[in-house]
Length: 137
Image (cartoon, rainbow, N blue to C red; front, side, top):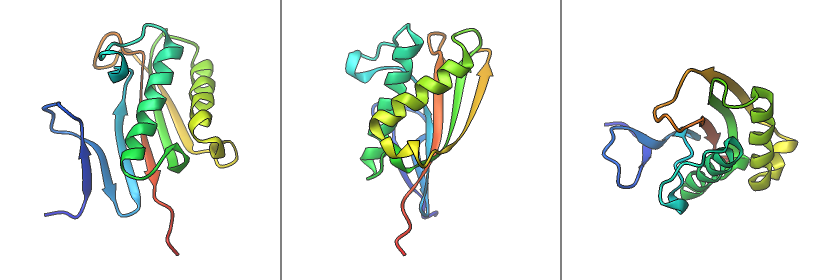
């Protein structure tokens, strides 16, 4: 038996945790643009997909008492040809700053990978992340 803390995706029969906490570190599974606030639809526009992804990431972190302010690493996966990679990075960061203005002065580390495709054909972007609870000392 491990001492890891997990949260799971609602209504999904998947053997994957939404978050996994190990000590003060939280690993956030890949977040895509399937929008639960819009009946599970995926926006066609990359900018709208970024907005949905960032909102869902922040909401997931809020469920465990964190926010995007606590993000220390992110990996953006975007589909080849979906948009200019530099624009995607900029727009992702700008959207994150709406929820976590402190990231401007304390940015997380990040990686962008351009891939041939994602799990669902309409996904143009997926982001996984690592966040951390503040030290208590």
